[in-house]
Length: 165
Image (cartoon, rainbow, N blue to C red; front, side, top):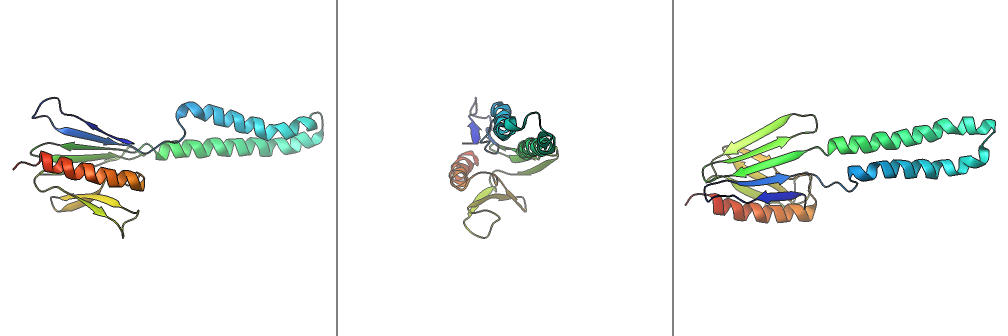
């Protein structure tokens, strides 16, 4: 799953949750996809070697490969989102780092923090929010529907464990 809990090393240490978007094509496969696409597109052009038609077709081939490269780079850039949730007995803190480098933060007392699963009406099905301190913030909107359900269950359990009694 594209989120991971870090267990506290001592009883007083906070729980840490890190969330990131799923990447179906890792960076290592990027070059292989570009090379494979270039090879597949240029195969029909080998019969045109030595003709003027090759020079008419070549710019379109290069534009197609460049568009694929640009699209994959844009996808990687949009996937540079990271959310970190820290659950301590006295405070809950959520930090979101956006692809453009901006950070958004939310904090509240753990006793008042509540996780909510919105099955309908949100921007995505099974939308998960945290509320407290007069604000409601989304968490894990980039996760799949099943991952958001699992995240909600984890958050409910950890919030109840972390909150002071």
